[in-house]
Image (cartoon, rainbow, N blue to C red; front, side, top):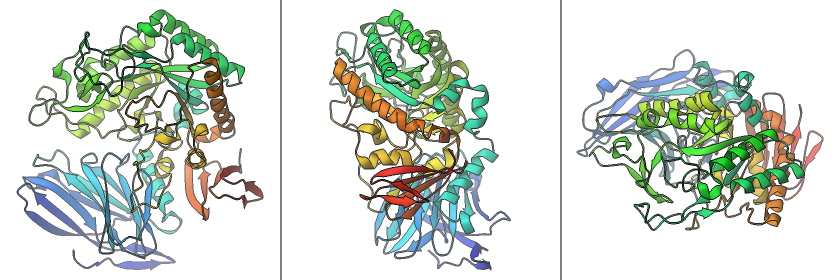
Length: 592
């Protein structure tokens, strides 16, 4: 790497990059390595744009990395790097590497160092790179590594480095810059605008999400490729009548608004026989009881939707067909883990739409469901490619078809929800079950999570921050407070912890309803969240404009209506603007 040659000019107390050297490294499948240095000047808006047309990329590429000279720092310098899932790290380690691919819900990253503050937006080839933050011999770098594996590029490489100044030169400014970018190109629109003619969205923005897992087969199963004779029995946890009992208890305890999502209502429960959904699972009460439940919920003032899955397929399904499965480059079927239905195969996004989505959504709507319909998996993974010659897709095209599935749900059922915060189809996503995935153990380079995704999409996409903040009122104090700090729309889940292997990614603590006492106590915990959320639910339609530490272990989240939430992680009270946040507590300050 050549010595840094960035030039600066004084602008009051700010600095602007005049020119920069960008190192581009090509590695080839035959192990060759080529390096090129590009001299790039910022445009009038302060954007250093690195653009490599796909027609100029050489054949046989394995990877391409892009590194401007201002995207580096040394140990001990002031500043930090920021990953798109909210991981923030200061420059304190001599060596280490944080490589992320599936943990990247946005094609964005940034760095603040004594020479520059920037946010990088990967606008070309946004789905086929890994993000690498590297500390080596005391030098930090952050860079995208585009992955080809010998295949011909289908998109240009484009990375736009937006240089930030003054009050914008921090991670909040980075997030706002990307939010403005998304809104200006009409990739998405604020909730306030969309809810004007979307009553289902308006309702959901001001209420809790309550998911109820009704039934499932052993998870994971020992029967990898199930047949109708070898299929394990389904556990019945919550029948349709029992869901009605939960609603009755909601009313008794004063929970007047909620969106319910039924999980496992379909044939043989959650992950039972996808893509086979119908008939409605008889052991839960069948279609007659489900229709009665839907009418009851709606008559009581609740919004009710269901969970389906357009991406997963099991051989036991009556409509199983290898034709619609993603093919790998060698022609083999794309598979994933073993779940309740056996070995799971990945459905091609295009075929998921063409063969299933419109028909299924109409059938689901015909049952009476209405609201932010939940389609699993779609936004918790990168868009998928397919190498079947009958329906070949690159990842850009995979994103298009996933977006069509969610747009269809908005049209047919009033709204769309999915599992994660990947933003490739942010304009068609109303609710993310969790915005970002938390690695099981914090990476040594990472100091803390900050609401980076939320400063982009709060007020645009409803969300809960992380899987562990599910059922937050029965979690530890840190988890409870984090939901508020990150502006989360609380979600509760009956039988969230259902896996036999013990890998409870949403938390070991759970809500159940096996008897009337556990049902009542579970609803009490939901009521606790209902009361808390009522005081700040109006913020769901506001942008989160800033986030920062105001003192040690005390954080401020500021909103576009002037409201501030102060979250105090200390073991003693903290005073702010005449109010006091108790130990491990928070206060809402300003406009209400």
